[in-house]
Amino acid sequence: MVNCPYCKELIGTDLDSCPFCYHTFTDRDREKMKEPEIELWNRKQEEVKLAYRQRVMLFIATAIGAGLLYLCFMLLMHFGLDDSVWMYILAVVAVVFIAVQTYLYYKLCRCPHCDRLIYRNGGDYCKWCGKNIR
Image 1: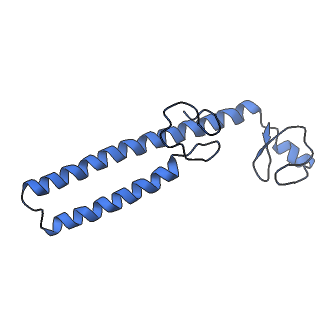
Image 2 (image 1 turned 180 degrees about the horizontal axis):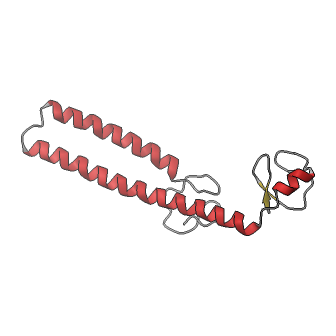
Image 3 (image 1 turned 90 degrees about the horizontal axis):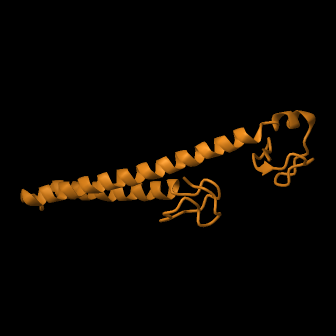
C-alpha cells in the first residue's frame, strides 16, 4: 500500500490509476510512490500517538480549568462579593471557557483513521472502524 501522489489516499502498488481521484500514474508518479510500507506505518502510528496525547492534555486542561473556576466562585462567595462586578466577569469567563473546551473536544476527540467522534471510548480501538487509537 502506498499513497496516491495527488489525493494522498492509500492505494495498492500495482494499480495504473487511483480509484479515488482517477489520476493515471506516470513513471515519475511511480517514483514518488516508492516509499516503503514500514515508513508509512510508522508515520501513521506517530499521528495516532500525537492525537492521543492531545486528547489527554485536553481532558487535563478541562479538569484544571473547571477546578480553578469553581475555586474562584467559592472565594468570591466566601468574601461576600457575590453581587459584585467580579461575579459577572467570572461568569462570562466560565461561559467562554466552556465554549472553547467544547470546540476543542469536537476538534481533537476524533479517530485519526475514520475522523468520527470517539466520545467516551475507554479502549485502545475505535468503536467505529476498529483501528488502534492509542
